[in-house]
Image 1: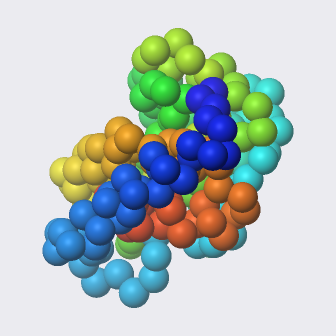
Image 2: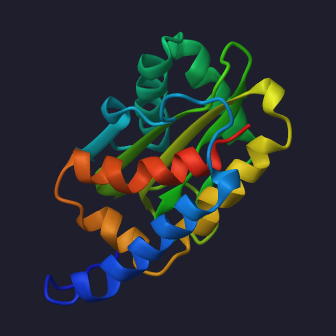
Amino acid sequence: MLRSSAATRPAFAAPKVADVMASIASDPSSVPSGAAASSLAPSSVGLGLTVATKDAVLKEVALRIAAAGGLDVGAVLDDLRAREALGSTGVGAGIAIPHARFTSISRPIGAFIRLAKPVEFEAIDGAPVDLVFGLLTPVHCGNAHLQALARISRALRTPGLAAALRAAPDALSLHALVAPILDAGAAC
């Protein structure tokens, strides 16, 4: 897990995160078509969760997505597990993006969890994961599902954003950082 001193955190994180948000806001394709609500409910953000396994992480993501969408948690978890069985969604640098396409939703639904302690996730770089973005998209979204994942991944590569997510003091701050990313990436 990356750590920085409080004195250096604002100097490198804040301006670059602001640039990401400005870029997302200025991109007309970033607004989900016909979406009235955010893809990420404030209640779908978890902070400081303590879990021991990758499967426990997937369960937390499934619980939050199911609650936000009024879905069956077992069905959401089954789909997340099925996708994970194809290959880890751990993209490196302590970040995972578990995702799946789901038949009974009409809009994308997301979740974000910051773990108290990193968990082994079979990530591409072998590093354990502490930042988890979950995304469920409607089956009818087609290629938009892949575009959403690519946009989220690009945003996460922005210098300082992961540090800002790790340093956010509370769930509302995390939601403010993550919601625009998921909304921009979740259009279909």
